[in-house]
Length: 203
Image 1 (cartoon, rainbow, N blue to C red):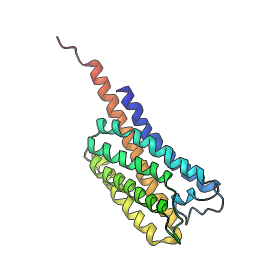
Image 2 (cartoon, one colour):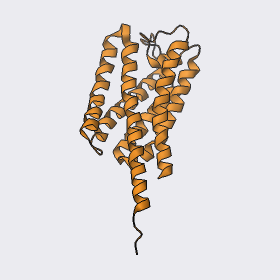
Image 3 (cartoon, rainbow, N blue to C red):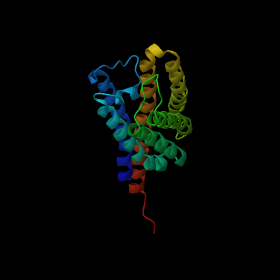
Image 4 (tube, one colour):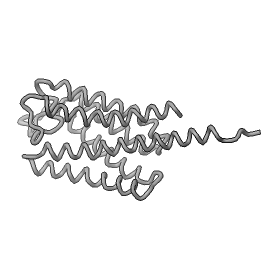
């Protein structure tokens, strides 16, 4: 159980790390406009290694938490978290094209596909996990996040001059939810562990 809680920390830390590092990159990356430019575009050019590393490390940490999520929450949520994390990591392997791209590259196309899969898996996880140990607050929070992520993503596609803001809002909403899920699952695992310790021995 203690090991399981450690893996759940990976999910929380990976999600938080992703948000923090892309916000730091917004400040330090030269010739980059976070109001207009997508998070993935930070992979391109000078200093792009930071966002590439961010995708890789954060994605691998989230993926590593998936088995523990499957045990603490349910198998379906664990699979979806694994997909979200793996997609994030692969988005670091296959570097993005500029948005909009004058010419789509093979690696930019793969980046878009795995990024879409990652986001879709995270949205689906919100709805699946909404039923797990559901309080009214948790259920409606999960549903709200599952609805808000696609909506803000669509707005980003329409409002191209402020695409960066809307895409960042999508990311913050989604990955913050995963932090809360991981911490909630960790609390449930700790409660189960304490229950096992006080359970009377069978004769």
